[in-house]
Amino acid sequence: MERGLFDEEEVNTVRSQGYGELLVRNSLLQQESSEPSLQTMDTLLTKKNLPTQLTARLEPYELINSQFQPYLVLDALEMLLDPNVDYEAVETLALREEAAAEIPEQVITIERGEKIIAKDTVVTSSQIDLLQLMGSNSFQYTILELIGRAIFILLSTSVSVYVFIQFLHAEKRLYLYLNLMLVSVSLSLVAMYVVSLFFTSRSSLFLDSYLPVLFAPLFTSHITSKKRLGLVSAFLLACYATLMEQSSSVTFFFVLTISGVCLYFFRYTIKRIDDVFNWFYACVISSFAALALYMLEALPLHQVMPLVGGMILNITITLVFLEAFVPLGEKLFNIPTAYRLSELAFSASPVLDRLESVAQGTFNHSRNVADLSFNAARSIGANAMLARVGGMYHDIGKADHPEYFIENQSGDNKHDEIKPSLSAAIIKSHVKLGLEKGRAAGLPQEVLDIISQHHGNDIIQFFYNEAKNQAQAAGIDVKEDDFKYNGNPPAFPESAIVMLADCVEAASRTLKRPNHSKYEKLVHSLIMGKLERDQLKNSQLSLTDLDQIEDAFVQTLLGRDHRRIEYPSEQKG
Image (tube, rainbow, N blue to C red):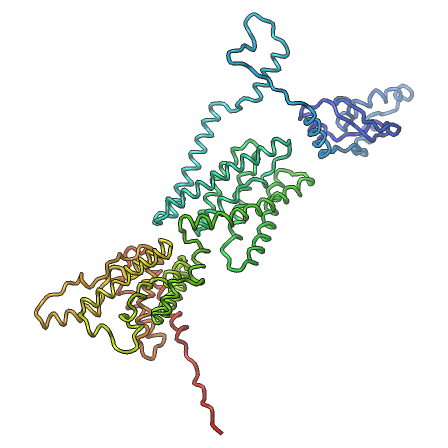
């Protein structure tokens, strides 16, 4: 009790750190003195060496009484005694940092060509210390380890890039998105190196929760609007993180788990209060996930709070950088992120304001096409917001000559006074004009593609038939190509959906007393017509997709043209 009983694991921990002595304060021997005593590691009492230390003390009792059994005393003490000396890890770390700060930095300069140990000379202890110091600061990896790490980096990077390309093989912005992902991963690696230096220089325990590995996955998913690509960048970062000197056995799974949690919660939101809730949920679930992983490492309880605090700080700082760099990226490269598409769909726009003022019919038609496109795209898992914006802007070219389009006419038809070929030329021109207006308004390329492709290279059937009738009477031929649109067929699902919604919305206005069966028959015939004329061959839409789009169109049209009861007229008294 006077010397104190130490915990065997704590003694081994201190011994493994290279210390042969330790300071003990507040024991029974120090009641009269407040100065701590210096004790060597070999003289410390533990349960393991207790029999060795007490054997000499028990020998006189055997001389007095031959029946005395010392091993019973030793067994009882080993069973009943508990360590009564606590190891203060935090205080020890603080004292070590203070002691390290008091030691002046020593710089040893070795000139080029200087010999540390010369031939036929006596080797001194200072020379040996210098060689050991140089060895401890030299590069620690062998040639085989370097080759293995290089192969691992090459393999993990190649796999990540390949999977990334496979997800976006039909995307025009493939290489832009790939470069942005690699840049964000590179910036994260630089930040990880800085953080590791920060912890190493302070002799602090390095925790994975402080690793800045969340920015690249979240940035990639927000820029591309695809969470799966965020997981690809998370996998790449996890592979790189495992090569760090401070990494643990759970670092790889930690990065993937925390990134997956944050990718799930940080989605596009309209209400700002939702961001606060998402931040809270992400912090709570990520902290629990981190604690669960570190239970495998037998993390001491006093390190739990730094782990949770580091996790919350990490997520918060990541969100700050995300809010700064995502708008910057979409502005520099005109990327249609969910936030950008929401602004285009629901915010005031000079282009749409002018269309509403000069072509009210076209504007209302565009709004209905946007609703049809949004519901159809959502039904097949396509980018619904892109389809909505494409539907809103697909006919902005009609603002220059609104009177030549039937939805804006309230009296005479301008086409009755001109030739069918000229009418077709005017109708076709709205696509080119819309493309020019879209470029001037700074619309994303995907929206511009929808404008240019929403009629494809289909034929303007009404004026072609009228021209053929006039040509037969005059005995001349009519070229079909003169009555075709000059665009290309839709090259991605959202563009094809807008094309179908455009013709469905227009044709639905011609039905008298519409009902479910009439809508179903009309929509099916229009989609099959586009399919037969090869307008959907590059759209990446399957027949199953077309069936789901057809159902979505019918339901939206029924909701638009719902019936009401007839209100009774007021009786005059």
